[in-house]
Length: 158
Image 1 (cartoon, helix red, strand yellow):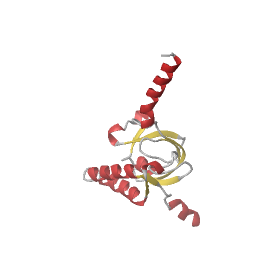
Image 2 (cartoon, rainbow, N blue to C red):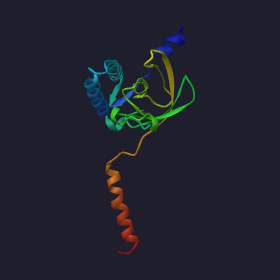
Image 3 (spheres, rainbow, N blue to C red):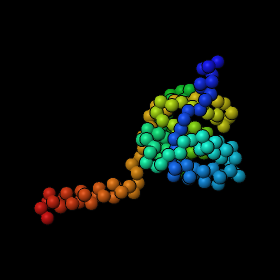
Image 4 (tube, rainbow, N blue to C red):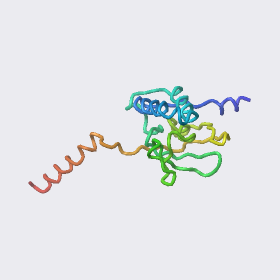
């Protein structure tokens, strides 16, 4: 009996303040068209620990994360968690509004969660690995070309 209680309890999750705000707005926007997905996402957001944007570890699933997980239904899978407009299953891009996308948000490597598929069946997945894309427009990225340009200029003796 104790094992059943453990598997039914959802793991602790962390979500950045900015992801929380964007995902809350998304859920509220789609609530009329897709109430089940919106309710599920809002429930996850409600139970999440909201942390400052810089305080979410690289090993935590956020929007844009590439996640490798092992479902109870078969072989490991790797997907990228995206907003609905960017979803493309043929490219491994899974929408946050899918049941599995909602289940993944905020998890870290080593955590597992029970989730309900659209057909009503319950499944469990185990997160094996999480990686983050290079931040677009990051200050460090913008400085990199300038630094390398300066280094090249110095090396050329100009």
